[in-house]
Image 1: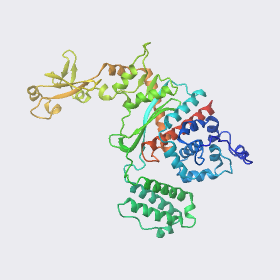
Image 2: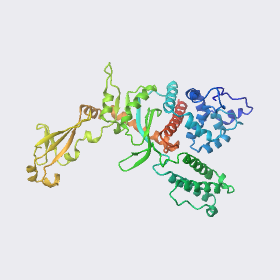
Image 3: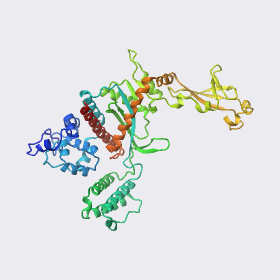
Image 4: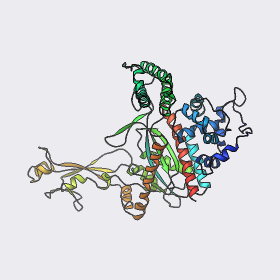
Length: 492
């Protein structure tokens, strides 16, 4: 049952907050900035209002998740920190002497109360509203990019995750007391998740029975993390990996297993839209939805700044669409792929040039292509591709035949993509001063991605599946936006 009464009872110790938490503390600024009652309104249909035991206040439970993003810890360590840290209790809205929740309540809240909620869009919209109301978000541009989040299991069986965490725990214990090496149980050698869990249980019990060592912070955090993973593993035992995660590529030679978060951010470094997908999804196709969501959240999008992944013809056509007054949808600040702008550079470097008068290619020896074929591509909006073919007889007698055409018994032929009018227009635009100045803003989103991953733990999913990653992304982005808003307000 959800209790609508969320006000605190009188406490003789509440003055401690005024004395010990300074005015410029992040938690005090967040509390003054945000009225979290919108969380209760959003989630009230997930609770029964008349029957059952009184539930924990959903606002308070949500703030626990924010605290977990601000300082990434296991649920057990987070609740323990909230027990003695007055700044945590202040943000949670409880009295200094009040007790905290049981850590198991957090897992239930994530799985039961946040299920099917559009938390990501709702939290971003809320922070955008605050930024606009405070007059700190005035830009008419958005910067777009994606950042990857590795799956919790990172394409390895759960057993490998348990082995890695138990290894880190043992090393933390050894650093505290080398003599404990003799006390450790024998490692599991069987390729069995059940046996690995059994070994971890014995390891945990062995360490917990040691004097002093399990209470050391470096050991305690790793101990609690292993226990939490074991509990989750029992629930997901039928799975050998995260079924929603997919393999994506950061470069030609490097890949990851997990998810992508496609982000739109204003030059003030406030995230105004985000979409979480599996890792294999290409960046470019998310541009229309990022623009739409940004506009819905109050941003007047006139410029969209991104890398060359967003310069596909569909996105360029969308940018060039005009309204009834003849105004373009937006300007796309994204460089074309060199394959399009430079044409068939390899052949040009070998001495092949386009003869404008003959309307065909001419080789280094001065011979013209004998024929030209159009390569049909039924996909709508694709650039026209041509195949230029040189005579076998001419190639056999050419003094440069060994340089440009090593294959015998065939004439030279190569394929060329001819730029469409859309690409020609974009190529001219990317040489203008406006384009070059606006493209300098793109670096800001790289720093934001770094903050999400390395400061707030968004480099790896803490849960299993796309849904859990969306919840994690929503909380992380909400926290980073609030931190950025408070920073900008302090600079005014």
